[in-house]
Image (cartoon, rainbow, N blue to C red; front, side, top):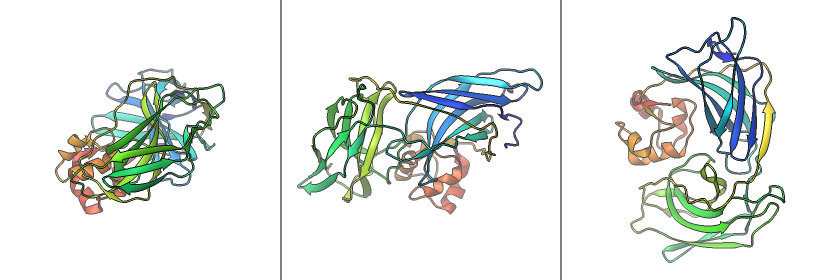
Amino acid sequence: MSNSSLRFAGQQSYAIHQDRVFLQAELAAEAIPDDMTLCLQLRATRTDDPSVCIRLAEMPVTAASAAPGSLIPVQGDAPLALPAGRFSHVLDLVLVANAALGAKDLDCIRFPQPTVFELPQISGMASAFLQDDNVVIAIPGVFNPRAADTLSGSLSLSLWALPQPYQGGAFAGILLGRLDLGQLPGRDTTAEQMMTASLPPGLEGDWVLTVMLREWTATGDLTRDFQTLPLGIPVHPAAVTGTALPATGETPPVSVSATAPAQAPEAEPVVATGVSINHADVAALTAVKGVGARLATAIVAGRPYATLADLLRVKGMGEKLLARIGGGLSL
């Protein structure tokens, strides 16, 4: 249990529908301090790799008060970004405080039942080969595992050069090519897809080629599945982030819900100040002394982070460098 005066108590739950989530919690506290802003975050941690933790949603907690000995109810709706890929995840509901000293986790509830989200996926293994100044990718097909009476949003395949292997969350990289597929009915599969992407001139550096299946939703263009290609191509390190495209399809329903046990495990508080490693763009991170453009891009690609120490998993970051620049960074 958290040692914070603000903590979870009673019952916590979530319910997912399409690309939004309804969060419900009860807090043990007489009142929320006026100088503190609270939010609920829903995070997903891969069961096969606990180092991969992705923030799915965030909902602000409005100020409230309660009679002594009673609980403060919190509930509301928030946009949801489901994790890409066909991995099993355990979900955490985290109470986060933002105050003058920075952000910290106050308490955390782990929902015990692992979850696998039914999202459009790449069928089979993609293959790629070089042809002059182009890379040619063959995708066996795309499958929509949702119910037969649903229709996907507008789907597309895109080829990205990334500074490190993709883990399913937010990312930054260089878009090399894109193929629009349109909408796909539930339980249906496309034919084999071929895509040719031109390689930019003046390539340098070793980046990871990744093919992504993306879907247009009410909250933007989201990655639903991905594969890292076993093809090494040097790519110029200038990085851009993906941008949303015009909406051409509807978002199909995805419904998941869960209720957590009344007892919550303890969450380790984290306090930090400076440029946010979870929210700042590449330019803002590069402005921190000791953080170059390549490292800043890798930091953005590795989000989210639960602590500053999580930066040690980023390629190019070591303990000495983190100790030197850590004062200029925050969560």
